[in-house]
Amino acid sequence: MTPRPVVPGFHPDPSVVRVGDTYWMVHSSFEYAPGVPLYRSTDLVSWEQAGHVLARPSQLDVSAAPGSGGITAPTLRHHDGRFWMVTTNLADGGWQVLTSAEDPLGEWSDPVRMTGVRGIDPDLAWDDDGMLLVSYAGFGAGGPAGLVQQAVDPVTGAALTERRPLWQGTGGRFPEGPHLYRVGGLWYLLIAEGGTERGHAVTIARGPSPAGPFEPCPSNPLLTHRGVESPVQNTGHADLVQRPDGSWAIVFHGVRPRGASPQFHVLGRETFAAEVEWVDGWPRLGEWLAPPEGAVEAADDLSGPAWVAPRRFPGELLTRVAGGRRLAAADPDPASEDLAFVGRRQEHEDARFRAVVRVPDGVGGLSLRIDARHHLDLEVDGDRVRAVAQVGALRSVLGEAAVTPGEDVVLEIRTLPGEGHFSSTALAPDVLVAGLAGPDGTLAELGRLDGRYVSTEVAGGMTGRLGGVWCARGELLVRSTTYRGADSPAAV
Image (cartoon, rainbow, N blue to C red; front, side, top):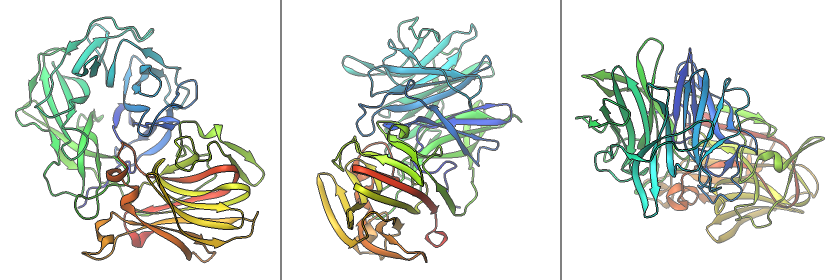
């Protein structure tokens, strides 16, 4: 069986907690707002998005975030009747932000800053005295300082102790993503190491206290796919959770690369899950959990929780008007970090994004992007619609057609599998096709682009593809949007 993600698409750095019979999980969101998507499940397999933790501007400022800047590696925990979430905002100089809520579906508090906790990937744990311990990958004046820990006041965010070093892993680079658990009379420290690319791994150690000293598991790594022939690579950054019946599971991220060497992944780091068994006091990975297969179709007016925008909240760009939503331009450069764009994640290997739009006076349309400088656009401008590829600083028109100014236009971008064995398209993860959709489902193609140019391996960074609407000048009226996806092209 080919492993499939339990939360597909750009949902990296999962952190999970169970309260009663419900599991709650959060993920990194980087430069996109709202921040820290929140999911819930009753079985660890089928997840639904419940909203975002950082859901309002008073909680989140990513206005200065570069691509893959902003919110990284949150931790979600439940303690003393409250849910707690901590993460790092790399975009506003404030380092760690801690927020809490009694009800995760309600409003989360405005964040408390931990300005004395300088690093990334913060974890939350409480010792026997109720002291909050924050473990993280520390930064110093000379650069990374390894995995460290401090006691912190959750009310003020003040650090109560100096840093103390923790276990640094098994020798892999970038020890990060620590999570502490008390299991029986021992404390377990789960970390990521090896970097979040092909060398990624999960390792674990245990000790008598949350400060250690920590003894590494003799069968480390607990999880890695480095050097392994698997459709899922870059596995790492994990979190453990115990079920009501006492059994355990683990969530972690990985990527699904496609195409020929060096292979390319386009969906970002996705969340997977697996069973965990305890053997001689150590966790061991069991069978992967398998979500149901099938096509997904979602029609939306840009109001659901799936929609995000880079550097600002969608509500700062969108206005509800008669017949749809109006998207106002922000920056005229289609390759700008500040371009007005509102999108949702591509969550399947084969997908179709469709938007019915009207451009009465301006320039805008539909886009499939991985960052500000790597995307395929459909651009409506007066009486023309163009398919345009943005690859770094190069912007190239692939094809165009005439449209009636001021009337609705149905735009569609599809992803198709590469063809052949030794052709150039066989090297690609997929092929992107852009055009005008007809009422019978046909597509009048205007241009196509090798999917490598909208991949992480070309663009760099930590995110995945999003499809959505954009506007570079004037206003774009969005009548409706539709996303259809599946992990089999025949199902799309």
